Length: 333
Image (cartoon, rainbow, N blue to C red):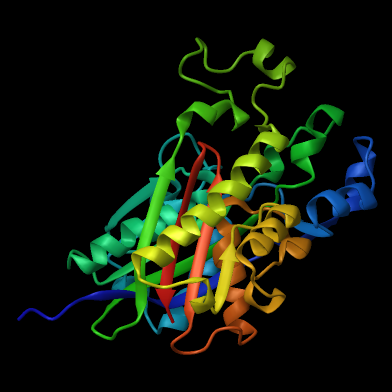
């Protein structure tokens, strides 16, 4: 009988840009305060890139750490999945740019755009490739540069104080051991696309970018915070319970939950609904802000570094974001 193939995280790393931005920074551009931001979001500081840096650039140190952690080299990687909503260029994808910058072999590089849910979607894709035997080692990169596209005015106050820059790299590898990803669960509901979106540039417009678009701020991220909150606190618990039920587990079996770091109020509501203790739910939004697709693996990497996970633990990851899209993954550590 053919041996069952499982996929597990063999290496992980993250990179937080050097430039630390505290809440007072935003008082130079809009009516806000440290208290207003921290009370509504939980964020105390975040990181911004230096001028001229894109997602592929800040991904490099994260990938180097992940490769070292997995005891692999670029030649051992069979495929790249790059999840970002802020690509270096419209085309080509940031995965191709990273392949050249780090001199990977001429392997496939797939970009996906699922915003805050990007890491879960990338994990799911990589998991299938590993389990069906197509690839042995897949590099998942999640890197975001949000700071260069912020509306630094009162009009953009609700979004610009939340989002930040950061990168993470995860290597998923084959194993015959009974560890790793047990299942992933993905969902979307496109009727809410305008509740969290960037309207322009769009191929619907001719030309794609013009002065009117810029004057109206259509190229900035727009978010209906109340709608996002309402749906997030519903979908997070749903998709977590879905993952547990699929694996014949219950809430008491969760050793660690790492939700997307969207907003401390959302995370607190999820924790309350599930009845979890503080030490079961990871939160680091106070230090890094919302790094979109990179938030979960950054938090996961910190959790590993801080000895929050032990062999055999049940780890649950969950995300909700633009689309709306949401998903979960459950792993045996």
